[in-house]
Image (cartoon, rainbow, N blue to C red; front, side):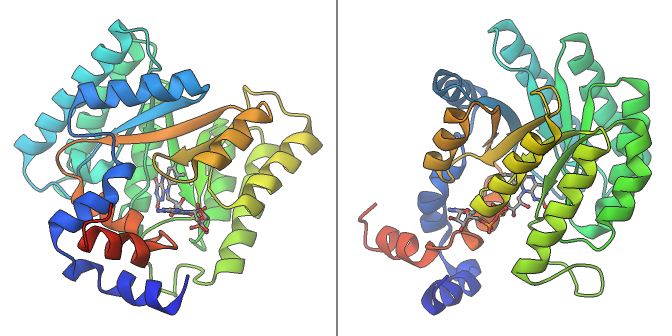
Length: 299
Ligand SMILES: Cc1cc2nc3c(=O)[nH]c(=O)nc-3n(C[C@H](O)[C@H](O)[C@H](O)COP(=O)(O)OP(=O)(O)OC[C@H]3O[C@@H](n4cnc5c(N)ncnc54)[C@H](O)[C@@H]3O)c2cc1C
C-alpha cells in the first residue's frame, strides 16, 4: 500500500457516504434478497458456492434483532425453495449480543433451528475481541444442540492457538481468517508476517486435528500454504474449502476453482452496508485510486 493509499485509508471516515457507496458497491450484492439470489446464481454458474450475510451489526434494540431473524428465515426459505446453496453467515451483534447474551443465543438458535429443518448451514462470524468468549460459548451450545453450525477464528489474536486446542475435541467446523477489527497490541499480533505465520500454524493445527476448515484469505502466500497442507495431508473436499469475499480478486477465485478446490464466496446484502463497506475499503491496497476516480465521476 502506498503512502497516499495509507493517508486516504486514514481519512476514509471523512469521505462522503455517497462516494463510499459508489466505491464499495462491488463488495455488496445489493440491498434485497433478490439481489443476493442473482449473485448466488452468477457465482454458481462460475463453479463457486456461497455463504450469504445479511448486513448489520451493533444492534441495541430487541425489535431490530428480531427483524434480522425474520430476514434470515426469509432468506433461508427463498434459497431453499429455489434449489440454491443453503449456507448463511450471521453476526452476533446484529442478533443482540450487545443487549444480552442469552437473548442473542435464542435469536441465533431460531435461525439455526430453521436452517436445520431446511438442511442449511450457519456460520457464526467473529467480531471484535469483546465478542470472542460469548461467540464461542454460543457456538458450543448450538453446535451441541443442532450440529449444522460453524464459527470463525482470527489469526491475529494471541489466543487463537489455545482456542483451537479447546475446540478440536468437538471436531469443529472453523473458518480461519486473519481478522479485520482494530485490536490492541496486548492481545493481537500487529505485523503482517506474524499474522501470516500464525494463520499457517492455526490452519495446520485445525487440518491435522480433524476439523473442517474454511481457509478464508485472498493472500496468495496463504492460499498456496493451504493447498500445500491439503496435499501433504491427502485431504478430500469434505475436510476443507477456500473462502473469499465478494468483490475481491476474481482472478484468484478462478485459479482456486481451476485447480479443483471448492471455493465459497461470502455474499453480503442489505441496507446496512456502511460499516462493512468501510472495513473492505480500508483493506483495499489501491483504495486511493478508487476513491479519487469516484470523486471525479470516472467510475
Ligand atoms: C470469506 C471470508 C470471511 C471472513 N470473515 C471474517 C470474520 O468473521 N471476522 C473477521 O474478523 N474477519 C473476517 N474476514 C476478513 C479477514 O479477516 C481479512 O480481513 C481479509 O480477508 C483480508 O485478509 P487477507 O487474508 O485476504 O490478506 P490481505 O493481506 O489483507 O489481502 C491479500 C490481498 O488480497 C487483496 N485484497 C484484500 N482485501 C481487499 C479488498 N478489500 N479490496 C481489494 N483487494 C483486496 C489484495 O490484493 C491484497 O494484497 C473474512 C474474510 C473472508 C475471505
